[in-house]
Length: 458
Image 1: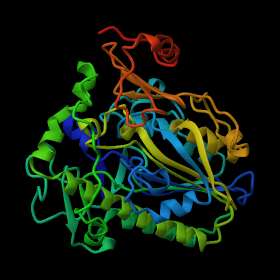
Image 2: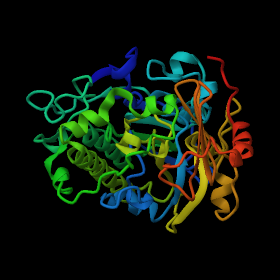
Image 3: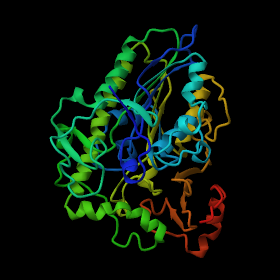
Image 4: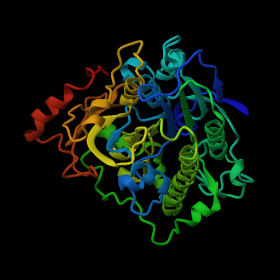
């Protein structure tokens, strides 16, 4: 393997390049340790990168094929309204792994990591390890990771010739790869997870995390996954021509960042890019299927919690925006699935939850006390009574001073400049109508504003 540390890459390249994962390999757990029990179950964490709600069970794209994720959702608690707490990789992963808000991790962009900003401070896996868990990571979990090289085309760029983006593995480019499956990083990370499940026979419960690099750019995945999505008849996002007319300058600036939409459509590549993103989704899904099959066939099948999440979403032309770093639904609405040991009954969860709830939930089920107060809350009470009301708005932060609050009905966005957007997500799920300037919603905005950090003077 080569060691890749995605740090100190400010601006465009830090936004587009890889940004997950922890070190690969197995950390020795303290001994003696108890055999997994209902109070100390094993954990399998599956993390994805840049996957929005284009997943079958979420219905984000009508043509997407994700049989493995959908099968998992069909026997799990599948959250229909789960949202990331940050809009790019390192801040989101820091929040997920610590249970803290961005305001308390102090990780605001991809130039920083949780461990770098908070030396000596635990993430939830550290707490599990000290309590006797075997903790193992393969692939992209945190912001630094040991990586396998991505098979590259003969030259770059292949498809997207003119949009500004770094070359290399983080290129905003796509290509039907001719390399064998086992030469792709996701296959190899998955195989490492499979090998762990097949060979692990310690008495200690384990926390195994497998992080996939897709659907992050570059979308270099095997040809057969492109073939699943013929460009003719492929459904594309369809923002109305006036979709940005009711936004202020801050919102318009975010939407048109890097001018990617004009660049992509000017080359006639919108359908090509959507095809490639969908191909990457199905490629990642195929690896998830391999891993879940291995778990089902292992001695750990009945005593393992399975969790699946994506660090944040991704735009492909909605609101004329591409990539991440936006507070609208495509950029923050993510798959989030929890399957408890022995669970076979599906629960489609309509409550609004945030990814920072993951860490306290897993600690709760494992009987491990956090070493600090977390901002997230354990979802265990909700999973034990799935039909209950769960009125805890989710705060998402873009960089340091732009924020959004999501409730069951509303998405409220406030930029550092004080500029506001308000969307009724029940009446307007595509966020075409900004209600913030209408006097009738002044109290709604005031109520939602109370969930945000104080406005910072510019």
